[in-house]
Length: 169
Image (cartoon, rainbow, N blue to C red; front, side):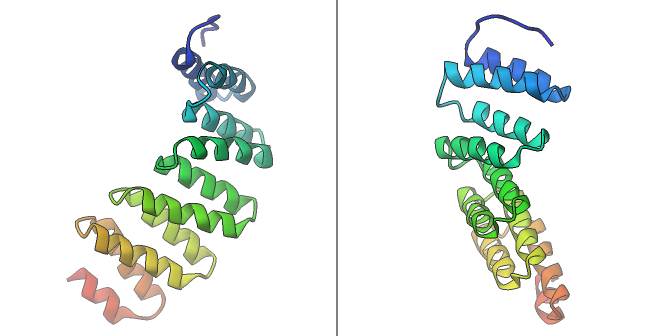
């Protein structure tokens, strides 16, 4: 990776991305911090710091930076999902639940939000929440077949095959 002095937030961000992609997380953090200093409202730089720290097994500190990114852009579904997953791994299920719901609400067309949220709920034996998320996804965007299939599979898993089959026809 190049090591350029100066440059704006975007330049520093892409240099950080270069280091991140070659798994030099310490160096990536340096450039993400330069990027966030150049533009404190650049959410992706803050998330980059968080992701780098997470890769360095510093999850509590990583969450702090991820929260900053989400506070700056609370409609960025990938960032919401990343923060939800981080809270799940930190065993803060309530915070994870909160951010999965925020991710689902951020964009009707973001299939990953519905699927990942329902997987979280299923993994945590919150089947009613999983079904609620998936039913809401089907209602909000019936053309997203993946959500319908996930809902059908969930019904099969909880021994309600009639409901599952109705979605497959």
